[in-house]
Length: 274
Ligand code: ADP
Image 1 (cartoon, rainbow, N blue to C red):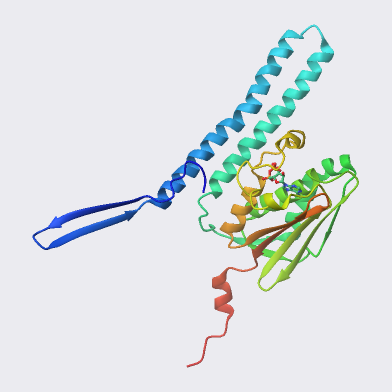
Image 2: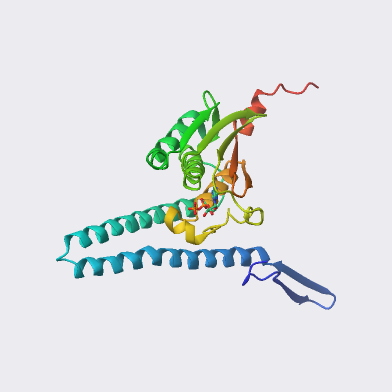
């Protein structure tokens, strides 16, 4: 169990009601307390994570001010300020996205989301990074497939998986993004030949702000929130996300999302006879 999270919290209140009757009220607040502790953890982590880029921008602004007579240095510091402020923007965006998803509330007005379009957009978004590392991104099987859900959320989930695949891949390797329909669901797989993930870290990578290697992470510039967003999107859609990985060889992430709203399926089903 997590530090600071009480394992069990039960209150019992006993009220005498006349000579024989006793009213016992037993209230189990364990879940409520856990949720509260997780929320507190999240707020503490968010503050910590925001402080890093904000602090860096502060230091760089000082450096720019002091180096004002050295245009080369000013340019270098300004460039780094830009990187840090982009990082801050990405972090804030993902925190907002995650806090929206955290309730795992049912989807409002879900629609048929075109898998091919979502995958194409995710690949477009990593084009520059992929080209820079000489990584080839290939796709297959995405045409004509739809999942039922929230387009923005599905796009964010696929985009996070594809950008991770590129970020954690070796130069000149390839990444594949494929989809296939499988008993009422669509399986979207993102396969890379990158650094892989140690077996004992596999179930932790979906935690908020968890990174396998925080030192390497600085250079890839991620937020540590991507996979927890993917996990929440899967949950709100009634789907799932799974991972296979061999350290040093690569990883496969599979996001499975339903093709239809269950109620639609029911209506299409023949009504049972008498
Ligand atoms: P980040 O912004 O750090 O990429 P994520 O939540 O998306 O955050 O991922 C959490 C951690 O899981 C990453 O820091 C990285 O250590 C690991 N990871 C995610 N995807 C991959 C991948 N395709 N290959 C190797 N490691 C990965």
